[in-house]
Image 1 (spheres, rainbow, N blue to C red):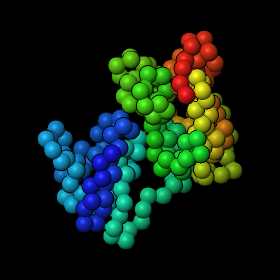
Image 2 (cartoon, helix red, strand yellow):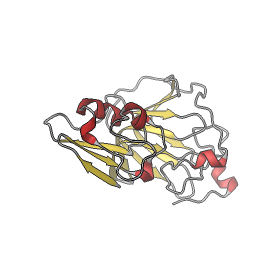
Image 3 (tube, one colour):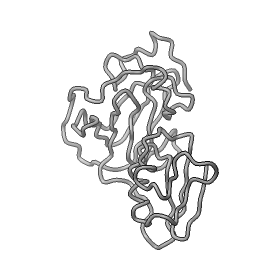
Length: 209
């Protein structure tokens, strides 16, 4: 974990959660310096609002911030989303809790089964050759009575992710796949009905706390 304080904002970087989406080095290249030796985060070299926007685009929550200029801190979004990344993880955006502990508003969760940082993605899907469409067919799209609120994530031992709360599961292009308040998401990588669990974890002997 790296914490770098600037005059108006502090940037917190959690390398264990980073999936290298490159939102930081492309969105604020004067603050997030790519391929340099030594310190690489310079909070004072980009306007605060621009840094906040870049942090909000970081799907994994690897980049967070604390403002000292009186501006608003990050808050929960008006609509909870689970976005399916092609051949990659599920990106959750909401007021997230993992096993009852708050973990912020953004996280990317492993769905290939190979991450060494479960339930979070660590990029292992690239080496594992994982394939999973980011555009599955729409299943159930009935309107929810509420679209925000807390999201509870509970990894099941040797099984799927149980996710509870108002949630819109969307494709990589933003199309609705399903609206739900409770779902089981595959994290073994072998479901024939991705992103949803179909019990394949039992057949393949998947193991995870």
